[in-house]
Structure formats: C-alpha cells, structure tokens
Length: 124
Image (tube, rainbow, N blue to C red; front, side, top):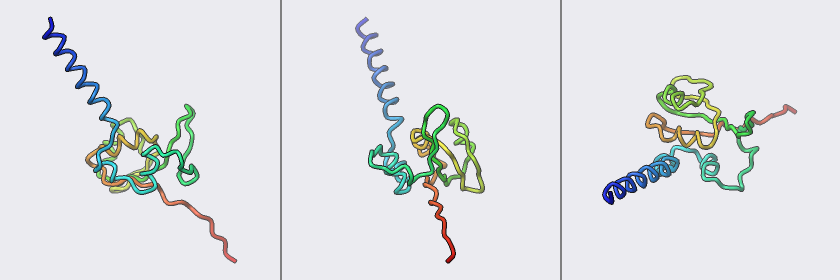
C-alpha cells in the first residue's frame, strides 16, 4: 500500500510540474517576440494599451493584433486560435496574451511581432 501511495504521489507531482511549466516560456520561445510584445508577455503593469492593436472581446478578454512569421497557419488553428489572414509565411492573428505564449511554443513559428502603428500625415 505504501508503494502504491508513493507511486501515485510521484505521478501527481510530475503531472503538476508539467502543467505549471507548460505556460512558462523558454528563452528561445521568448526570443520569438519583438521588443514591444516582450513587455506585454512579461506581465509588466506599466505598459500603455494605446501602443498595441487591442480590442476587448464580448467576454471581456483583451485581444491583441499580432503578426506571426512561420510556416503553418494550420498549427495555430489547431490550438483553437483564429488566423485572420495568411500569405506565405506571414499571418495576422488576434489573440490573448496566453494564446500568444501558446503560439510561441509552436516549432513552425519564427517570430511574433506587434503590427506597426498607423499614423496620420497631413499635407501642408
């Protein structure tokens, strides 16, 4: 009985460790994000929302527009994340910060970038 309890306890600890580490990014995965998104995924509280293409979904979650450079839009779709557009290796996606981290874990993804800010210029 003691052996069974010890084995069950070890199994539960391994499962718990695997679940906790699945949301953490490795250095290689973190390096896929551009500088602006690095601040966002790190959970910093001093970010300025207007620096991002952000909308609020009906359920209240913040969705960020990102550009993903990678070879498989289907892998992103398999995660349950909608791909807005895909042309060659460039995809546009609107997702939460947690979903960005899931995308970064895909081996086919090379880079994740915040889209450039649009500015209005007036001729004088």
